[in-house]
Image (cartoon, rainbow, N blue to C red; front, side, top):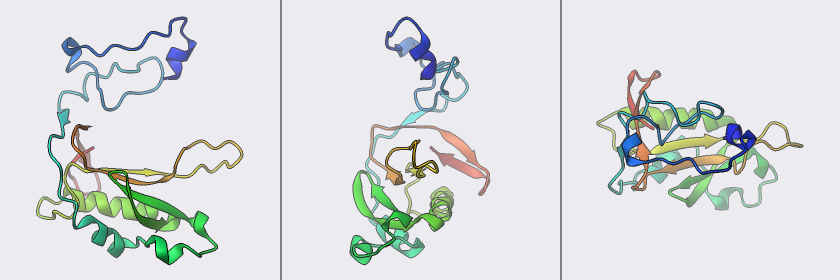
Amino acid sequence: GAFFMEMRTTDVRKLRPEAWGFICPVHTPDGAPCGLLNHVTASCRIVTHYSDTRELPALLADLGMLSHKSIVFASDKEEYYPVLLDGRFLGYIPIKKAVSIERQLRCIKTVVEDTRVPCVAEIALVRRSLDMKNIQTQYPGLYILTDPARLIRSVRNLLTDSVEFI
């Protein structure tokens, strides 16, 4: 983080096995307490399997995702975010509907009986920068990750009052 840029040393932070349970490898704050959160890593898990994502493209289309062909000649291409599933481009969603689509995906993900969105899916909406002179974000879009070898932890989804893995 930014805190380490101010230090005289540029040594890499070491995450040793004996630190398991004391340092959160998934979510760490920027600044002085970087890597020192000990309450969020206790429930951390590793995704060890490939998820079934066959129903996800159809669900995204039902929620408002457009194919590349449908907007290839559109004059307002800047009004859409790309949608990527495990690094594979699927289509575009309108920026005005992006937050709603993200929330709907999260709600579906927390319903145990509904398998259209895998329970271990990571859903990340990266919004475009509001300051076009000093762009503050890179590659805005809706990213859905389901591949194995990711660290996840359980949190309470306040919209559905259920457990969600992030």
